[in-house]
Length: 381
Image (tube, rainbow, N blue to C red):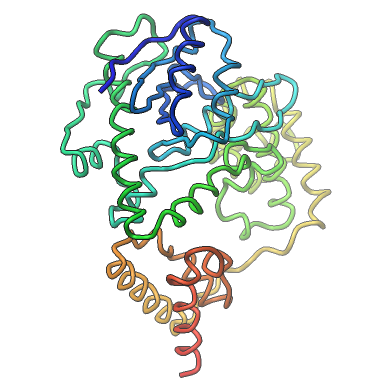
């Protein structure tokens, strides 16, 4: 395999991109840190082809625009393993971040081949790890010594750089192995369809107005409480973005919900909400109380609270039978069951009679029509 070249200057980057450009695919991986920030700090970008392997240091002060242009070239396949986080970090890095307002997401580098998805389409567990796949399909054991490295510290040791390089060095033969296996079984279109879903830029950008969707159980809240929790979640997300701090450092999820449930109308009432620091109360009480007041005013736009209803035992039993059918078909096809159909897919069919996920693309013919027919037959019994 080619030795890894560390890239720290504009000239080295230009030469590296010229080497990589000779291939119709490029294996990619990233190393990043985000424990203390909202936005991930991109620390390394690893890229490899059959003939080249480079480690690009984005902290070295280079002009990375030629790299972004290279990654946006859709004539070249981008190969990743479990690539959603890498795509999020890359897409974010390619988009200038404003301190005043959220920005529109950049185009996601594509087209994509995800080796985790490809392996699941060939019978591996849906969340199979990179090292496991390298061992099973290539017979090579990867070291684990630097899994918790602080990749933002400089200089990086030779061992750290070698570890980073291995994440793309072996991704190249793994891709070729999986591509051949998928082609042999007529499943390349399945992988392509799954990978296209990963190119949706909304997957990698949280709009503050949609931040409430991360929270669970909102349907059980009163309309005024639900309107309030949406406003507080939006306020927290926008502030976390602006300050580049983890949202939990701004206000914990538990506190967001507690405020919405208590609906405090004054600083005195807000003081009774558990989990709020004295510093937060001193600086943010007025803002939070105003959001609660606005939430009360917005209550009419929210649906009534939903009282949980115990599902019909017959429908639960039917969903269980359909899940057994999914597992049986997955075993027959040698596909990870979760990739074929999730419990949610099955429950949608049983409880609502529909599932867009199962009536389009490769799943429709492989499993969707069978599930819908089986559900209809059971309902008619």
